[in-house]
Amino acid sequence: MDKLKRFSALLTALLLTYTTVGCEKKKSSDESRITLESSVSSTDTTDTTESSDSAAATETTEAINATESSQNATEASTETATNTTQPASQNKQENSNAQETTQANNTNNENPNSSGNSNTSGNSQPENNSNSSSSNASTGNNSTGNTSSNNSTPVQQPSTQSTPSNKPQPATQPPTEAVPEQVYTGEIKFDSHITSSGSNITVSGSKALISAGGDYYISGKISNGQLEVNTKEKVKIFLDGVSISNSSGPAILISDAKKIVIELVDGTTSTISDGGSDKINDGALFSNDTITIKGNGTLNINSNNAHGISSDDDVIIQEGTLNITSKKTGIMANDNITVNGGTLNIKGGTNGLKSKGTMNINGGTTIVYGGTKEEKSSVYAQSGFTFAGGTLYAVGNAVTQPTSMSAPCFVAAFSTSMSANSLIKIKKNNSDLISLTPHNNYKCIMVMSDSVASGSSLNINIAGKDYGTYTLSSGLNGVNAG
Image (cartoon, rainbow, N blue to C red; front, side):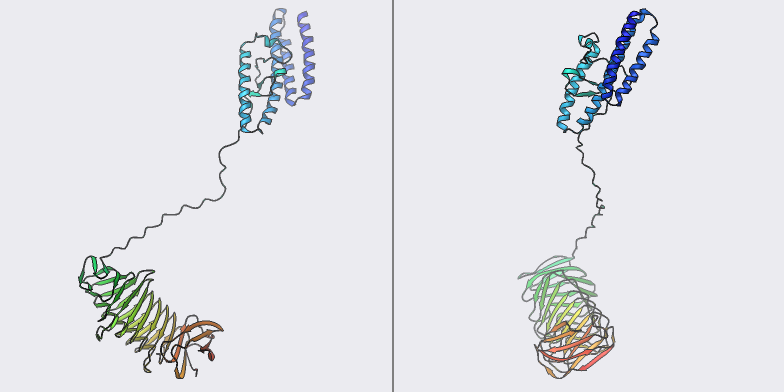
């Protein structure tokens, strides 16, 4: 019992010492002291005989060691928080040192009888039996401040993963549907020697004949040749920058076809011209059947015989740019002329546009000049003329008044013939509308356009001379301009 009393006195002294240290530490040291007191109380209650003195001393020593481990854990936690701010390379080195220290600690824990365990100055590495989370650390004079933790929060390493962007990602676009490649029934290339491929094409000297329906691709250049279509079926011709001249008849002759379409390949310019004195097939582009022109290309037509385009049926302009200069009429149709779109620039030798049947202007821009004969017109429609949209500027010796119109029709008439090649400037509401240069003398000017509404004012200036300003009303507006 004397031994136990002496040991209790020693324990009390040690407790006072650790209490003082705990005041300088964090709150975790107080928790460690409570653990120590609990351990001592348990030791006093459990050991009732002198024969258990040695065992009690051993348990008390382990409790003291647990207290030291808890205090060291507090220091380790503080150092761990500090280490989280260090660069990754330094943390790696410190973790390596901590691992070496841990290995040394584990060696000492496995050998409790080593001389290091008898050192009470704080240099020993006691075996930690505490149930609380703790960290082994090297302390005392040889302490490096590095820690090795089995249960404590690990040091955070800088992340190498990129942070996902908050920007909205573009929606996946559906694949663009492939445009099917045009398949042609046959191809013709004009040159000094005409070549062809495909079906239903016959080449004879400088002429190429299409004898069955289908789609045909035409290219090349020939100075004296002809393209002819003769079939009861539908035919579509694609003109891709072709140039055909014929000194004795039409450059393109449609002898027969159920339906003929000429498509101007986008972005290309084709040119045709005729000659001779054929009074039956009397156009640089002549058709015995209805002909339709479309495509976003350009077709230049020069007629040295009679008409630029001539058809025994209808002529329909859907799109494209047509530049026509003709000895007689620019576009001649036996039944009907319809303009739905495109751009037409026509210089006629007699009439500009002439239909023995009806005429319909529904869209596009048409600039047409008539010929020199006084009885000939810039626009002539024997059975009726309808304007339903687009723009029409017509200059000539006469003009057919529309029977139906969607915009005011302005016609300025002159008592004397106005000179050819004199610049005409027309202003709408004091702003430039159009400039025109007729290639022949003329006596009247017609203006019809979707952009010219009732109430608009038009000013006419010819060769620098003002011929008046006129305010339009709906319907026909005929004025004597001079």
